[in-house]
Image 1: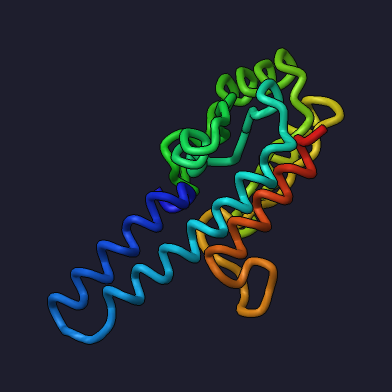
Image 2: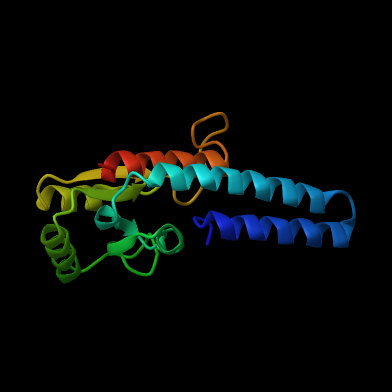
Length: 169
């Protein structure tokens, strides 16, 4: 659920309350403050994504990580390269052909990959599908400290910008 910012904000509040109840301190207030920071960042993410027309809110990615994101921010997942979310699985040639057919049928021009997962197969599908680009996102972790992906909130903002640049009108 980590790409649904409201769920993360709620989890942060719950965790802060539980930590304070267990070990004391000011964890509950910290949880509330961090949750508010996440909600503020989510408002920016929603605003950034607003440039993407409803019919263009279609995602194809390398593995099943964007489900909660798609649900929260009103996107359709047209295809997943590796079903089940395992980075060790390999799709069959029939699955690859079906994904390419789906990409071509919908006229998609962008696939989304993960910075931390090699994209050779996704690159090959993009090349096979015509004029299709692969846009990397941070999907499994945040980036290096002080980078544009250095905090959860920054990572989500940067991912939203990358999606808006790729899919926006």
